[in-house]
Amino acid sequence: MNYRSVLTFLFKLLFAFFLLNWLISQNKLDTKLVLLTFNNPLQLIFCLTLLLFDVFLSALRWNILLKTKKILIPFRDVLKIQWIGQFFSIVLPGGVTGDLIKIGYISSIQKSYSKKTLLLSIFIDRLAGLYSLLVIAGVSSYIFYDNLITYNPLLKSVIFINAALLILSSFALIFFFLNLKHQLKIKSVFKSKKMDTLLDSIWDYNLHKKEMFYCLLMSPLIHFLVIGAFWVINLPFFEKPLELKQLLSVIPLGQLVTALPISPAGLGVGHLAFERLFHFIGHSNGASLFNVFWILVFLVDLLGIIPFIFLNKRNN
Picture 1 (cartoon, rainbow, N blue to C red):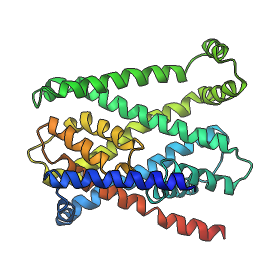
Picture 2: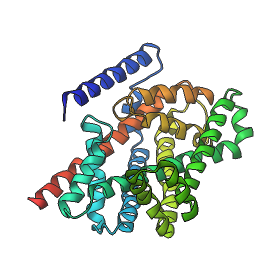
Picture 3: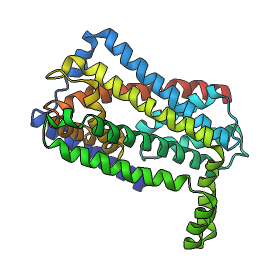
Picture 4: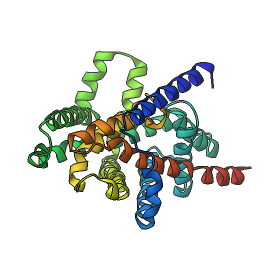
């Protein structure tokens, strides 16, 4: 780990705390709600269960992608490594630190596995998750358009962004499933052996359409679990009744902003994004709602230290 990455991480952390301090000073972030979640233990347990199942499904999706590349690792180990990766993503500097840790663990199990292939599997896994997130936002915005507009006419801008992102991502998906004829045309444009190798590695997943279908089918379920967990844990704190379907249009966009490598684990940036997005649907405490959810996600990821300890003991 070099000094530049550490300094970048510290700068991002400072920026995150600046945003949090600003939100608190503007009375837009109430940290006391986190403590109030313990007044509803059943909701808390149910929310944590959904988030834990989310880790399970994420590992299952990655495991499918690994198998398409003949990387045969017992699922229990893939689950542990997935969770360990999430743990290191929040405790170490760098946006891809957790992914590098995952690659390191797989390589330690079987050194013959190509690190480039492992990295590509993680990349495709992320793309599947991103595409399903955009599908949820775009499709729900279209289906519930009339209902959303009654909350705030300004939501039209959010709906437009959701639609634009869905269209762009759909073109990306078409590129992914191009037939051989069109693949050759694109290769002729680049005329680079390195680019040809990269494109071939990506298009190789075309040969596993059944597995890719399962991944794409599983991805929305993963996001529905996250959105459902957000809704369940914050039910007592909504300023007015809020249906789950209304969250399908705003939370995905908030998650996209949170995923940007601007601050560690979306700290601060996610709070600000949810504050603005929830303002569109008539709630002024979006940052506080996100903070409750963010703390629980942080705790679940932090539990990744358990498989980290046990997996290391087994390997020693």
